[in-house]
Image (tube, rainbow, N blue to C red; front, side):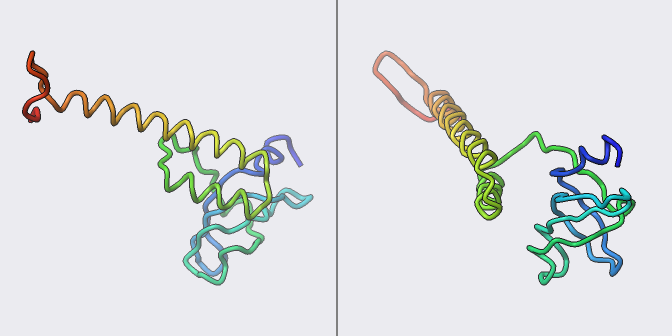
Amino acid sequence: MSREEQSMVGEWVRGKTKKGELIHGFVESIDSTGSTVHVYVVNCDNDMTVGKVIAIPISRVEVMNESSVIDEEHLSDLIDLALATRDQEWFRELVATSKSLQKNLQGREKRTAEHRYIRNRLGTSAIWE
């Protein structure tokens, strides 16, 4: 197995099974020949496949790019997944990211609220539209 294939373990992938089901999950392992990946399925057309590890030819999966935009709902789902897989390190990273995101959102809301009002010498007046 090449170094490139080993680096796939833990990567988020999407692909298609032999039955044509679209899957989304992460690579748990790669077989010794390097031709098949074992994917833990997080989302799938077939609800019965979700939560299972399936083997898919490596040619049928595509490594997904990391999303630069993470919202609170997405983070919550990832935290649940980290708990389900008992990955303490990942859980801690996600919680720290969540706290940072909440702090940034609160700061942004505060700045937005400050700009929504016109200030004069008598205090705050009408909303700036």
